[in-house]
Amino acid sequence: MNSKTFCQKLPKVECHAHLSGSIPLEVLKELHKDAKERQPNLGPCPSPSEYTDLRRVLFFALFGDHIYHILDTPKAITRATSAVLKSFRDEGCIYLELRTTPRKFPRGSDTFEEYLDAVFDAIDRNDQSSMMVQLILTVNWDFEPDKVREIVELATTARNAGRCVVGIDIAGDPRKSILRTESFTRELIQAKLNGLKLTIHFAEIVEQKPFLEKQLADLTPDRLGHAVFLTPEVQADIVRLKRPIEICLTSNLKVGSIASLEEHHFRWAVENQVPVLISTDDTLVFGTTLSEEYEWALGLLNHDRQKLLGLMVGCRSRSVGGCRAKGKSSNGA
Image (tube, rainbow, N blue to C red; front, side):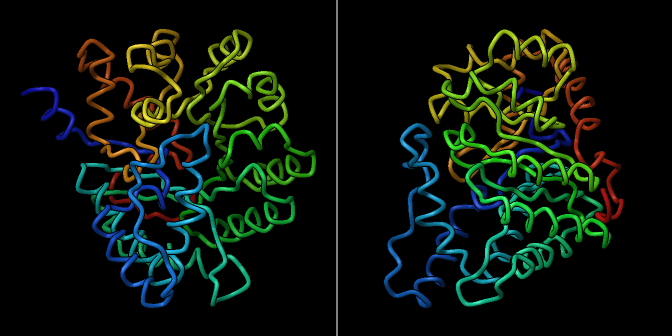
């Protein structure tokens, strides 16, 4: 069995996938057509591969200027979520942590609950016996503390009601992380006190280096996303505390964080026994699949299949939802 087939057949775990960035292209086109009927002035459906430049902020414009305008109703969100779940299930994913930023619909409720309910509608229809789904709610670095509090309270209420919300993610323009306030931080600490796990997009650009140690000390994240531009001190901290890293190989390559996969810090993490979680980030934007990410990782492991399987065992133990066996209920964290 060749590496491609081996990785396709593997029962896989995905812990860093953004809903809006993982919609299959054909479904996005259908949703755009529907949205055009509601919004005659809506621009053409974007070509996601043209928006991978993280430093020029084109990446974030894809969502704010385009995709969010297409996903402008609860029905559109449910349709998009269902398509994303199916795409991962078809890839052989048995455990998925899907993350999304709650938004308020232009012609709907003035709370985030309507958005979350639309996502739940799709998750409730998912076949839990083949793929367990957990949800992480995302806040952006530039959100006002009141907005962060509202999303944390939404996540906490959903979790306490037995829904599948298990954590909070911090994402968005990494340059804005430098301006993080104490009030912003307090709301995230409260999320942890409420029993939610915290994962943060970390060290995505070199300009963040002087602030990394303080981010770790203040936020005490349970996992780190990307973690590309690390200082020696932060590297030592990650190795000492075995802080799990969500590894997104294709994403890091296509946004220009690394020049080649050969220089990716995945190998450094594995060599230093740092837990890694092989992930896609945004399958739509980066034109990748979970199987392909596992195949790239296998190549960086010199095609050592047993080592890859060992990493997968560690990956399951580091999932914020505990990565329980297939067939279990999605309720709870």
